[in-house]
Image (cartoon, rainbow, N blue to C red):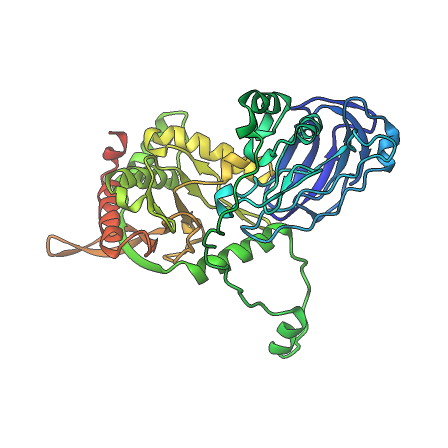
Amino acid sequence: MTEGNLAKWHKKEGDEVKAGDILAEIETDKATMEFEAVDEGTLGRILVPEGTEHIKVNQPIAVILGEGEDAAALDKAKPAQAKAPPPAQPAPEPQKAEPAAAANKPAPAPVAPKTAPPPPRAAAAPAPVQRGNGHAEGERIFASPLARRMAEQAGIDLVRLTGSGPHGRIVKHDVETALAKGPAALKAPAARAPAAAPGAPLSLPSYHKDQVIALAGSPPYEEVPLTSMRRIIAKRMQEAKATIPHFYLTIDCEIDSLLRMRKEINENTDLKVSVNDFVIKAAALTLMKVPAANASFSEDAILRWKTADIAVAVALDDGLITPIIKQAEQKGVGAIAAEMKDLAARARAGKLKLTEFQGGTFSISNLGMYGIKDFAAVINPPHGGILAVGAGEQRPVVKNGEIATATIMSCTLACDHRAVDGAVGAQWLQQFKKIIEAPAMLAL
């Protein structure tokens, strides 16, 4: 995330605020999230009104008055309009001004929406602390106003502390603990040589609107504004195809037995299961049987996941989203069907939680309902693979030397060649075919 929209305020100026209170609703590119307060005090001033769009991550949206502060301090506070941080770069914390009338009383701390967590400290070597705001250059430090004031007065380096408050916030107790440990906890970290920076992100070219019109020969056109979701999809897919070495493997699966089982379940129980529900379960079991395919690539190691968290593509009016069936290998087809129905409905209503569509270890994209025979999908990082599922259709097959008809479903597996070798991908499809063609195995 680099920006969002402020949909609604749940507090008004003058309201008392406690840690954990819902302050506002922030619209991300794919869902509407509740923004919780991490400090207590009084909501002194709202800086961003309801309905404001394209608010950058870490841009202040309100000012909270701390204990002992009154409305006069608001005129002294000058929260910066922080720009969106570039990928993998920590964002600086907005500056806080001290009221001129009281040198030892800090100005109210601007509240910035935490729609994305700060990058890990290992991404850059610690830099000297800028005294007066408790902020280490190159890293955002979250601390309550009281903790900042105590740390400044005691000369404590906040970058040395681990926060015990909400979302890792440094609070009064953390400063008191550091004081009890003695001088070693108060010293700034020794200067170190900068860590080797990871590879710079690719600069991917794109055309300006006027260039596209000229290249197309200036035909008549209708302009459809880019939504936040469409911008994110375009960016992620372009990066995925440019940076991940894809390879594709296709196999045909005979699903007549599966269709008979599905019909019996739907006719004789209250469950309503789809072919895709069977595919999700079969893919999860296959990942457990071929664990080398349930993997993601990192610069340090290949990570092989212990559970099958299956992200399933769901089409929306202006894009798509991938809600996740977590630990699908442990769930029955009926449970998967009920969970998938609920996730898809809330996805289309924009009511998914972040944890319900961010993450996962493997993806499935099914276009069979549109009559698509087969296709190749783009890997969704950091997943090591995605299964593209086509329509089941009647095709001629040879059985025992004779031509017969069977319902065949073509499935294409896209793999990240950095994490999954060709032979591993082939073994995965071979095992998947074995399971999907003998659906009784799904009950084991």
